[in-house]
Length: 198
Image 1 (tube, rainbow, N blue to C red):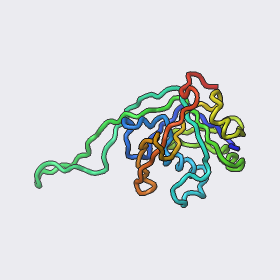
Image 2 (tube, rainbow, N blue to C red; image 1 turned 90 degrees about the horizontal axis):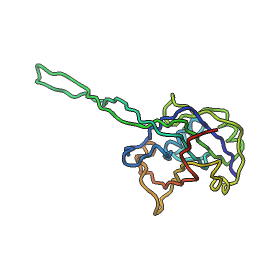
Image 3 (tube, one colour; image 1 turned 45 degrees about the vertical axis):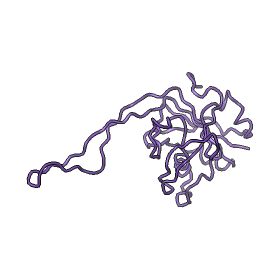
């Protein structure tokens, strides 16, 4: 049995905690294992000192209306020196990144116990940045894992299954676990991108 908490908000900015660029994986449409682990540690701070892993979130599903491309200006940490010893200048060059902002994201988080779901349903979550918050909606939904995988009207969306199979692809390098590669395959239920939300 799964205990599901539904989260939603007006927008969500997913900045993957990986070294793989979105242009290679188009990772806006799924949550990497490291993002899920970060969400879990926000909801259950007692896990902060645990080894890397996902302990309480059993499954998830993510959907949205559209992705709005936004540009972001960045600078590297270091400085570049130019000129001679007597006439030296230092600069930090700018660059522009394009990242996607999800419009009206909906995230279902499934837990194995009702107690974990109740704790999660009393808190907000962030998909990656603190200013992009999703809030719990409605009440806790209790369903079987089979219904979670087959009810296309209620639980549509994208879910990255973090396992290595012939369908898997590289989704990033986990900076929380010695930069180990993360693999998974994408499960798509129903029509994952909706035009209207209730």
